[in-house]
Length: 211
Image 1 (cartoon, one colour):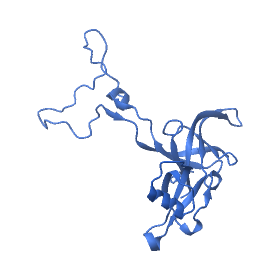
Image 2 (cartoon, one colour; image 1 turned 180 degrees about the vertical axis):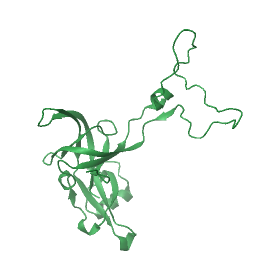
Image 3 (cartoon, helix red, strand yellow; image 1 turned 90 degrees about the vertical axis):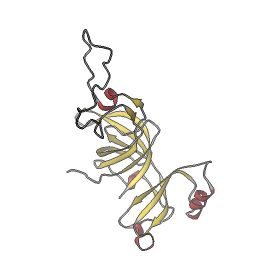
Image 4 (cartoon, helix red, strand yellow; image 1 turned 30 degrees about the horizontal axis):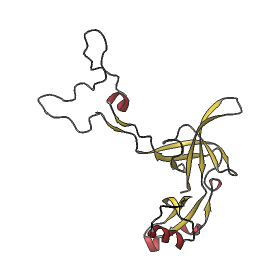
């Protein structure tokens, strides 16, 4: 699997050859460095660890030793990726966006969505709310009845209720790679990407690409 870490810069729009505006998310991807290689004969599976964004402080001694062994500067983000042939990678190798994606391809992006805090059922589950006409009490945004009846005399598991919203890992599948700028390390993906501006996301080639 080809993948790279990057920073979400925000959204903008580009125009295609038919002068249609296409909303895109711009991601500053990489460069990342290979810190460790895991092989089936030694670790039971094939994978690589890649590091992103050098860290000037806050690296503990075990992690500092881990990076020093690979002769790679300590980094703030470290992820492990399963690969079919780990022997195609080398310790310290630099991975750029040009090694992962090309214009016209499909990409998957994983990130942590924006945290919304504790929310009600209207915002969290898109409930329509109750009536607001004459004679209705001020319960317009309340969820309403949540029980069944004397039988089973309980609330079923998984009932949509108020609660914590957002702040979860979300993966967007099959986004169009509208453009790639290898010199500046930028990739433009059609549509939205989870997370706020400045958040770190994982960009990989689509695993369920259609067409």
